[in-house]
Image (cartoon, rainbow, N blue to C red; front, side):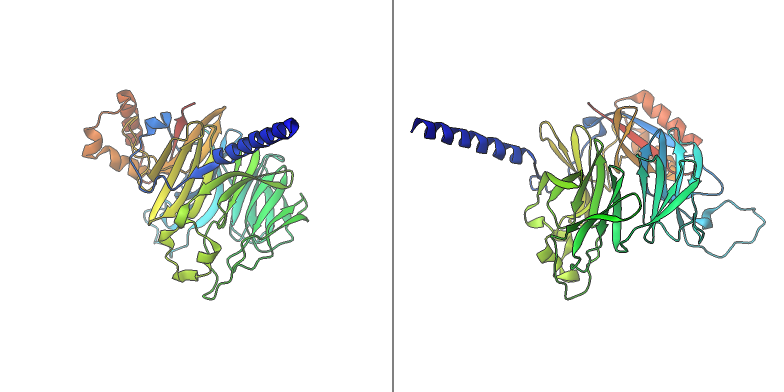
Length: 403
C-alpha cells in the first residue's frame, strides 16, 4: 500500500511537470485584441540608419525580403525600369514592368553585386519564387520554376539543381538539406512537406494533416507555410495549424501553441471558400523570434498586426504595423517591424523606409516640435535626411534589442 502511494505521488508530480511545460509553451493571442501605442524604447536601446547605395542602373521601388549573413545584406527587391536615370534629351521609353532580383550590400549599405538576372540562360531566371542563404555551402540560392540556382557570394553561377516536385510554394534549409512545402490551395495535397538531398532527390515525405474540400474553387492565401531560422534550427508554421514546430534531423517537434479562440482560421472555415469573411480570422504573415521575444505578424480585423511576447515574463504587445513602433529615441519615422537579424552577436529588429518618407518626416511640425529621449540623435537623423535625395534607394533601420 505504501509503495502504491509513492507511485501515485510520482505520477502526480510527473503529470504536473508535463502540464506546466505545455502551459509555458502556449502563446495566448486572445488577451490583446486591439493594438496599443508602443515606444521603441520599451524593446530597444538604440536605432541605426543605413542608407543603401543608389546606383543609376537600379532604383529599388520595393524590398520584398532581406537576409543578413556574413556581414552582408542580401535583398530581394523590385526595380522599376521606368525610374531609371536617363539622358534628359532622350525620348521616353515604352513603359516596362518592374523586375525582381537579388542584390548584395555591405553592412554599411555599399553596393557589392547583383545575383543573376532575368533571362533564359542557365544562370538566369524567369522569375524568383524564393531566395535562400545556404550556410553549409556559403551560397545564395534562387528558386525558380522547380530549380535551385546556386551562386557564390560574388554572384558567380555555380550550378542548377532540379527538384523532383513541381508544386512547392516555399523552401528552407535544414542541416544542408532542403525542406519544401507543397501547395495546398485545393486542399487535397497528399503531402505537406518534402525533404530533399543536395542533389534534389526526395528523401522523405510528410503527410498533409489539413485536407479540405472547396466547392467554390481553390483558396489561395500566402504564405501557406512560414519558415524561419532560430538558433541554427529551422522552424515552421502551416496556415491552418496553431502550432509552431522546430524541424531537426528530419523530425517535427512542437514548440509553441498559439491560442486564437474563435479567430483561428480552420480547414472548416477554409472550405467555405471566398464566402468566408477573412477579416474575422487570423491570417498568418510572418513569425520569428529573438532570444527574449516572440514576434507574430498576421492580418486580422483589416489590420496588419504585430504581436510581441516577452519569453521570460510573458509581457505582451499588439501593434498596428501600418503605424509601427513609436520612435521616441530620436523622433524619426515610426518603425514598422519586418524581422530580426543578428550582427556581431547583437540582436536587432530590422525595417526599411523610402528616402522621400524620411525627408518628408523631418519637415513635419510634429518632428520639429518633438523632444526625443536622445536629442543629439535627432540632430544626427536630421543631417542624414538632408544628405538624402528623395529618389535614393531605401534606408535600412535597425533597432538594437535590449538584453
